[in-house]
Length: 440
View 1: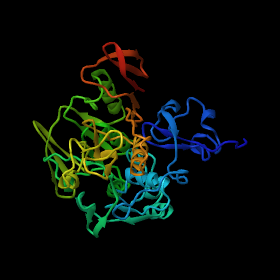
View 2: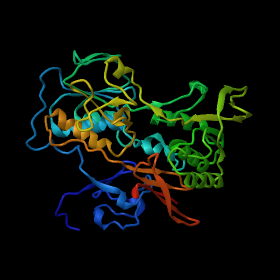
View 3: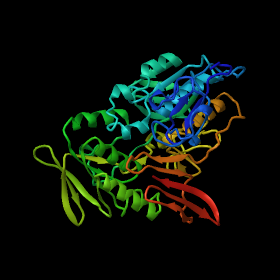
View 4: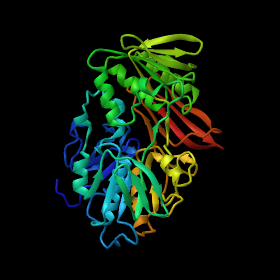
């Protein structure tokens, strides 16, 4: 093939995986140098399994700075400070560096800042992944490549927008612009003691749980049958463990799926070996002699197990934002076009933000949000963030689920087709399709 045009990249709208034409997808039989248009239509995302049609063009932000772009104005402070070293934080660093080659960038993160795809954590045991195989680039390497001052193992403890100052456990930082990319933390009901319940929300937590499980099969109780709970249940079963999945609802993903679909998902998980207990409330978790745990249930016998995993949703840690008197409502409130918070020169993106009253906890929009923030900081008003509903993909091998659009409470679900292998449904409002759903 003659390379008469630059290599292009395409992003999966469900999980954020990037297909690079120059690299290809050798594991799926797609050779390096294969143009996206030449990939067969039945090719699927190697991470989450959505089809080729659910990819869209992606402009890398780590290329050379934008030609002719105005340098960032350092009217006060010493550059851009980013709080958070996850996918959103690094996306912001890439975007700012693409706009300006020399502006100082400092990243404050409580972890090491190593870069990985978070959706891979819920399928990593099946793949026999290791920490080394999951890390795409170390934080140190990314910082060196982008010219970022990385303050790893550092916590942000206070913010003063009036002073343009961030207080950290390693001293105070002045900033010209501040970007909050703190993510969201697992929500843990009072009945679940933190020291007895695993929460798989980052790479380090996954590594610790994998080490604890060891090589012998274990009995794992997962509390919460949302997307994360269902994916982990499927993954633990595939790795040879015994899994009991609990939820307050009668069926898994009942808050998102119509009854017919959630019932089908429950049947598929049970056929794979998962024991599902619906309409079940946990009263508490205690440690037993010998290291096992007991999960007490309301109105039912307790469950003895080796490990307990809490998959009970996410919440934004708003202590930093609230202390700075930023507007908070189901997350840090941001302008839907610029991602600026209620304070001048303070922006936010990723899992920690709320747009039009709704949390935005999806991978795919992050790069667009980062680009909009970098453009706003640089004074480019012609590159706003335009929010759109991403593709939702449940990575359960027993029954994959793909949803386009977000269901609404007053919509009416209709069956398009129902076979032994596949269920297709659509939700309509006033006779117009607003959401489509496919299982199988």
